[in-house]
Image 1 (cartoon, rainbow over the protein chains, first blue to last red):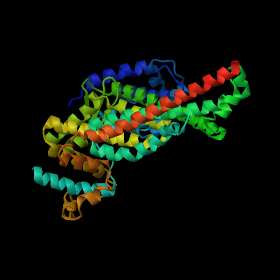
Image 2: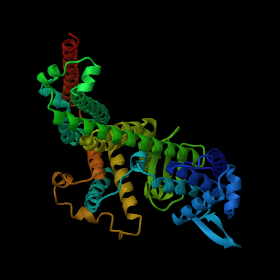
Image 3: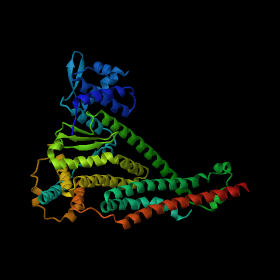
Image 4: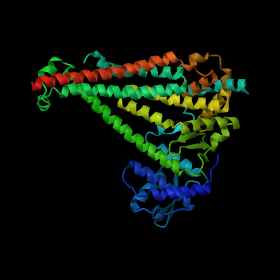
Length: 144
Length: 320
């Protein structure tokens, strides 16, 4: 069980550079969101849409970047601060590894993710929960 | 073409009914292969039969007859299917093709996106721990697959239970289980009657990974406990539910398990399965299921041969 925030940032930055060229389509939008997130995560400080566009390295329209940033803000992934006439964006918290959580959240919004992610445990109904507590109690009693 | 042509259209209904009992009674690896291969075969056979029925409508169009130098009288006389049936089959086939293409497209997009996310996850190891209070753990398909575990989930489990969790997720990642899910879902998209089979496949894949984890750790009860604890942690962690005492329900444990299990969801079933000894192979049951699917294949082939013979005779009459 390891994560390595140094290497993580490097990997994330590389990923961001690779995925900045296709602005069309809904899947491309998800891809751009991940790239923008990666840029902000790697930056370590609040960035303006212009900064984000420069760091993405592609030839994205300024308005596209603004759209993605505000969408991520709506999803609760980014915080924004008023700086002059524009907003500056920063990831909601800076703890290491949080990038992964945010990306998983972005992915959660994709269709078909149910079947794409192999979850350890699916959600429980109330009946299931009660049943499971009883079985869990039995298993714990028998098995230590 | 006789009534056997309708067998591939009816058999998915039987498969839908039989999927869950088979998933519960066969060892999970066997059940997964059986369900996935059957659903793909049944979807292919039912689509092929719809195509053949639709073709019998097409060849009755006079223009097609003259182009193919076929005799319309012969086709009408040896009537393979009534025109409304043939037209309905054509419409169903078109709908099936459209939903299957759409499902394929969406699935491919979701898998590509997941693969991208898997690459973007921090660190170089297969396992990524994310700092998150909510207990969660999943395998993200990709090259390679990544296993994401939250700190909340790690905290909820003991050391041996964490080994179960890791072994379970590794089984998903190494076994490329997402390919099975994808195949089953595509089959279900082409023939919606097969949806219960796809759902049962999701369950048998979890069971497969559970059994693998039990084998790796050498302790079925431990595996059962880990799943139960993880599921309870994942359910109670959000503040939406007041946390109840962990063993409050043990006190109420007078109701017999079989009665309660009938309405249980996948997680309690998985735990119960691990608390039982492993399933025997049940070769007879397996053979029966394979035979039924094979019968569908044979009847589809038979229908194709009949259709071919019909077209040949129509052509012979048309050119003479």
